[in-house]
Image (cartoon, rainbow, N blue to C red):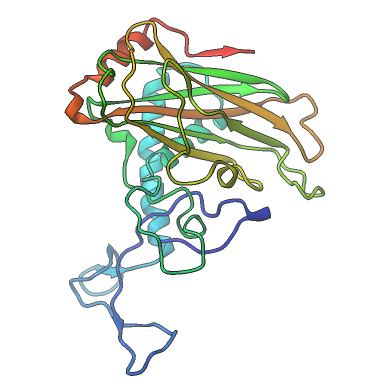
Length: 300
């Protein structure tokens, strides 16, 4: 569940939406804009929670329930980040940004959402999308998900490299998802508020030119004072690939709202490559084997 509205300077609010349970309501005798919710029976619907009532359990709905479920997922992702970094020195901000990026990367990017019968844009209700995946549980063999951690100063950029597997020279759906998260210092005296504005470019490299991303428009994803960007591209083009070929995504940092005063910004990015299962390519294993012998970030 989620509150509906726009963030500061029309930035996306919330970052994502999560199920908060279903509720029963009583139909009005006459058409009305007011919804009257009924009392949930002993067997639901809703989300089962602890209670002081007889039986010690009850059902409830609301944003608080959704928050608890997302928090539980974030805790699992915390353990995943610890496992992936394998003792490497990372900052608390990088760890927090990684969890945030992985949460947003697990949304549906509007592929499973129907357009509402309302004048309110869909992103104002569900942010970057509805949480549908828990990346702490891993991924299928036809997909590879890469986590990048880094630091950027004002005017700097870093190039993230994702190796490509063999077998993409077929006319079938391939999808590239990218998510970026950072924690920006603020300047509450300035209308721009956010001192660090990070963004990433459209994936390029050994692939055909990608068209408009699925879901949010690029300008909407970067609007206002957001500290998350999530976009998805699909293509059915056939192209040569294999060991030595790759796609790249550039992450850029711009200062605003008074500047960064020479400080750097910790960020986390998640980039994934998904190939239709019918292609029969073990994307995960091929990309993993190449990542083990390559450097994923190059500073410019």
